[in-house]
Image (cartoon, rainbow, N blue to C red; front, side, top):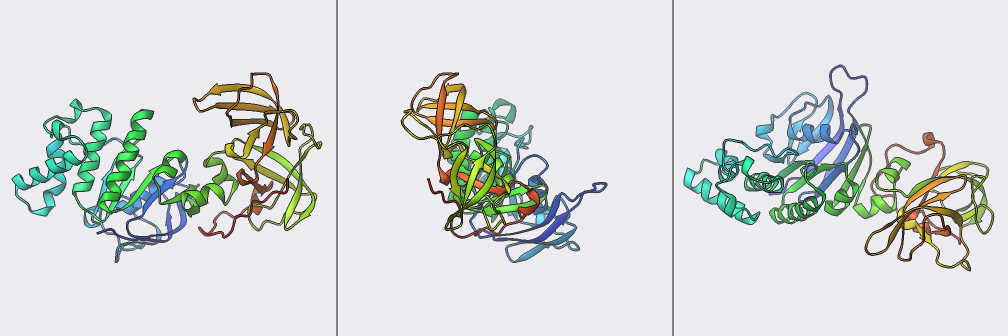
Length: 391
């Protein structure tokens, strides 16, 4: 049966460390949810997973799995009593056991006969497509096959919570994509609550029901993949979930309906000087005329114009072009502003060409230039989109 998770003000500091690895993390996870914790190395995602598993003791706060408080800074339930399974980055298979016996090992506490354990293990190996490899040892299996054995071992334990520690990071790109689909299908079929950590935003968005973004031990945003992508709470969230680039801009006035007039830094070329689309700030930030701001631009927020007759917001030079099958991906140098990457278009432009660009407000997020005015923790539900343009 899938277990809910309740994390309240969880703090963890490692001995000798000057700053906490986790700082007042709070998050509720509904039963059966596929939660992906996303963040760079050192953000605290692995520490949070280890606290859930019981490998690490928390300093303060509380952590509940199902109806049980498993840690509260004083009490600490050991891993073997938390009724959970883990899928490890390095597979963690017993080298002296066959694939069949590795999977059957997860049933050792069920007090089943050896024959029944092996029969169930063979059935689970069949579900992950490895029945023909049951008698092979881990060193006789490929990386993808070993990962499927590890997944089968986690699923057969039939726990209410599955923890996945970057299980695809050791695989090549094609195999990672195939294993991502398999993990998603099998875990959801099992109905367990799943906590999965990764530093790959594409993987996170593809797998998750809920994404939690961690920065320096703080949970800076959580919500559906669509919500986190379209409404990033901070510049860090915007950057880590994929930007074509950032432009320094200045607020020059109001355009009505909360929209701000913007100009790019000196040196940018556009049809109307340095004028950009009017935008609302990405949140209730006190931006006023004369303030400096940061315009974060998704790759989906830029259009490469086909015709000189179309009016651009910015002009630049093609620094690089790569054919991607369905079209072309560009790196564009904007004079005085820097480079935008990942700009997609179906038509071809050559290196060195001067091109015009239009900005799509749905992919543009406006933040204060001073990071101190951006809140570090934001509720998952921020309401309607604050990103609206006038041009």
